[in-house]
Image (cartoon, rainbow, N blue to C red; front, side):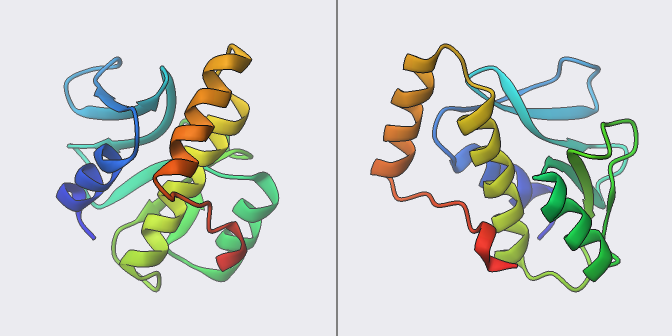
Length: 132
């Protein structure tokens, strides 16, 4: 995976928008206005995603390519290098996990969240949390 395929994958998820709220080099991916991923044009070798705290620790312990996210809440965010032990399928699973976490926990009001989760379910997107 590289920055281009990362961008394409993020934008393929339902209701995702690409924004640049911080500056022109940090591409932020949001679902229903809530951030779930970021990639920097200045550092195109890695990306940032939300992660369940227990899963984050487990991934960091198992893979050198996964680290606590610099400038983010390190309990809830990982930075993942594109190159390393994880396959493209596994990197996509981490992006989906982040997307699903935000969809399930951060989208409000509840009616918008329920509608989003129904849409996600209807297109067959699953959180592969059990993958690891």
